[in-house]
Length: 426
Ligand SMILES: *Cc1c(COP(=O)(O)O)cnc(C)c1O
Image (cartoon, rainbow, N blue to C red):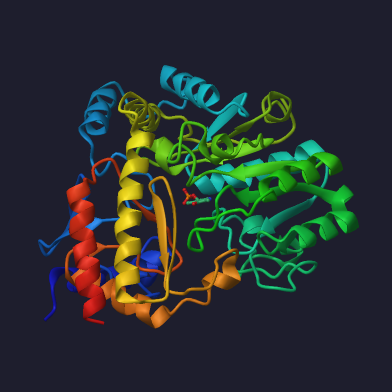
């Protein structure tokens, strides 16, 4: 029976490649078609056919207070009355910079962008400009947006010959990006012994969360920090997903690491398009107009996005939001573990604060190769069975789930009931 979403998707496909403006939305990893959202409030989204779901995506991370929180919608209404974008400095961007520098000790200066992709792309350029070196090290399964230098995550053996992940990325660019398996101390040490003096920076997702959710093993982040320092390279923490989600100072605060540069996005924009990169003043002062590294943006720091982001950060602070999110996360994790054990399904559950991932494998997850061992068929069936019952989890087994302050214990319990029913029917 064709519903409104299905009809609209046919139209969308005629005018938008694949019918979507970002690939994972096309549901290719689960087979089938996406649905279109009419409205969202709190932890719930409603599609154009009128069906409502409890949502565990939160726009892929930004909506940490839930959808359309009044503090943000009111702020947007108020600020917009005085103008939407000027391309001239405004007070909100100064307040945003002060807030970031105040919350994240390693950041002395910060520049705003309009997306996480721009933030990481600019941080890489800055690291290259500062060190006068070309090579970048990244890790398999880490996603840093879609700029040329960073769309390289090709599998094993890509260590010395970067293999682009996308057509259109010249091999000559990809070769400047060296890819290593995550959590592998020996591979990292060996690479720096061979090429350390040529390496501008390591960029790493502070907790890799774009290939499931993976945690650094003991001493791994410390090794990244010490080896970059020893060889005069920079350590770039990509906290686009984790920043302002797990605590005021992100993973670097939790793990007590001081990266040279950090990238932010998602939560910092309150649902509007925002990114940021910052770090030591000595490095940041290499950016134009002070220094030779060019970086710019027509809408960067616009008052609407800055005010929305600030409203979100203030609310998190005022409500002790991170502590509350951890309580919610713990509650959900406990229930989910009990459920999976009761059902006897091989699984791993990774959770930190309000971020979680359920893997359909009993293999220990330390890098992306482990993530790939999941029972994908089981995940697909689970996804559709949950969706049918009104729970929306990411349409891919390689994504992290998000709780928001709008989820209640009752919502989480209802979700676990849906999970139990879904597992019983697949
Ligand atoms: C989402 C994400 C990005 C890219 O941000 P966009 O705003 O989508 O460009 C970069 N790095 C990480 C870790 C992300 O999760």
